[in-house]
Image (cartoon, rainbow, N blue to C red):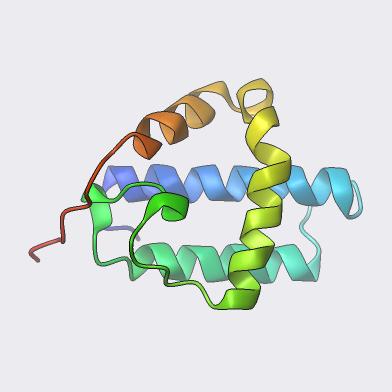
Amino acid sequence: MYSSRRIAREARTIEAMIRIYCRKLHHGGQSLCAECSELLDYARLRLRKCPFQAGKTTCGKCAVHCYKPAMREKIRKVMRYVGPRMMFHHPYLGFMHLVDGLRKKPKKNSG
């Protein structure tokens, strides 16, 4: 489904973040509400189409902002809320997201 293990991990991270956000702030159920489900689908699509693939930094530090403005604002809200809590819910994914954020210039995928 994804071009690399790195992108697959990022997809798991964003899904975990959206699920935490939805569960805590929207309705408390196991399934996502329609708004969060739409955001997750959009984030997955953007990851699949990312020109940097395995060489990418985190989306917030990327030079290319491929999210539409409205979706970008939604994902920012999710990140602001969940970011500080991520280490408690998903320590490995939270730690790896921090490490990925240390990457400097993304390298464009040659294939």
